[in-house]
Amino acid sequence: MEHYFTKDPQTKFRVYRIKGNILDNELEFFTSNSVFSKTTFDEGSKLMVETFFSNEFVDNTNTKTDNNSNKLKSNNKIDNSNSKTYNLLDLGCAYGFVGISLKKNIQNINVDMIDINTRAVFVAKRNVILNNIKEGTNVFSSDGFEKIEKKYDFILFNPPQSAGNLICNNLINNSHEFLEKGGKFYVVSRHNKGGKSFKDLMKKVYNNVDTIEKKGKYAIYISEKE
Image 1 (cartoon, rainbow, N blue to C red):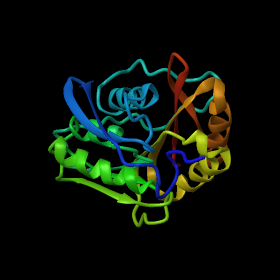
Image 2 (tube, helix red, strand yellow; image 1 turned 180 degrees about the vertical axis):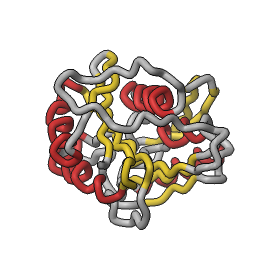
Image 3 (cartoon, rainbow, N blue to C red; image 1 turned 90 degrees about the vertical axis):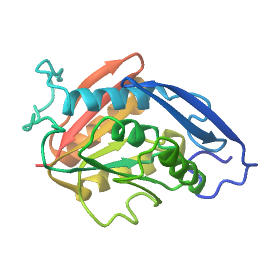
C-alpha cells in the first residue's frame, strides 16, 4: 500500500488548497494526495510550530519539563534583532507547513525543508512561492539525511509512523550528526502511540530529553547536542 513516505507516488495527482491562521499569519498551502495531511493542518505539526516558536523565540520562563529528564543546558531565545542567522531543518516536510509557518515569523532564520516524497517536495516548493518566502528557504528531495551537507541549530521532526519505527528510529539516530554543538532536536509524536519509544531513544542518543509540551494526544520532545 502506498503511503506518504513513498519516494515516487503513483496515485493520480490531485491538488487541494487549505488555509488558516498560524501564529497570527493567514497562510495558504497547496497539498496533494499521497502527501501527509492533505486536507487539513495536522494537529501535531501545528503544536510543533507553536511550541518551537514559544520555546525559542518568545521569552517564557515557565517552560515545562519532565521530572525524570535532564534539564537542557541552553535557554537562549532567538532574537530577530540579533545579527546571527540560525539554520533550521524541517525533516520530512510534506507540503512545508512547519518550515513555512516558522519562516513567516522569524526573520533571521534559514530554513531547509526535505522529504523523500518527490510529490511533497514539488508541492512544498510552490508553497514557498505562494507564501512569499523564497529568500532564506530551500526545499529539496532527500532520503533522510542523504543529501544534507551542513549542520543545523535546529532540526524539527514529525516521525512518519506509517513507515514503521525502524525508519523513524534511524532518522532520530542520524539527527545527532547534523546538529551544531548546542543545537536542538524537536520531535512531535502521539505520546500514547510510540511517543515513549522515541523519547527513550532521544535520551540514549543525546544523553538528555525533555517533554516541553503536551496537548491532547500529542507531546513535544526536545534534546540538545552536548
